Length: 127
Image 1 (cartoon, rainbow, N blue to C red):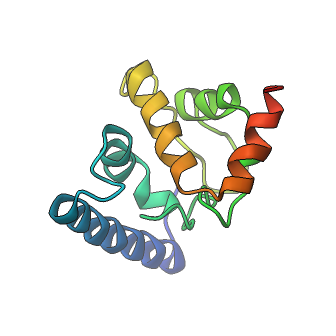
Image 2 (cartoon, rainbow, N blue to C red; image 1 turned 90 degrees about the vertical axis):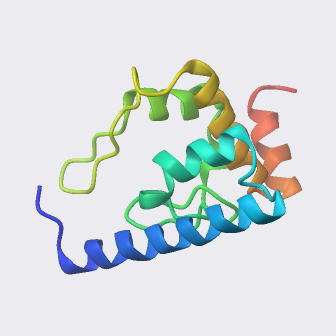
């Protein structure tokens, strides 16, 4: 699949954003200075944005809809990937991320949500 100019620009912007966020996290011990934050920046930020704002992939932070999925759904998306014919596809990370890394990334994504969004997602699990 070839990447068009818009997609290349989005990748560049996401990479710069992730690099800046990583630098800030190392300097100030911010949200990226956690196992999930570091794994997210290394593996996810290029497509989903350094702050989860979305780029080639959908937004996962406060402006997205990830809170409408259970932790099990999010883990399956990360592990198995997502196939969207005609659209960018998300690779699966099975064998490249441990179960703990997947859980840490989910925890990091949740840290980007508002309190109301965390409550909405928690309600999916009935608790």
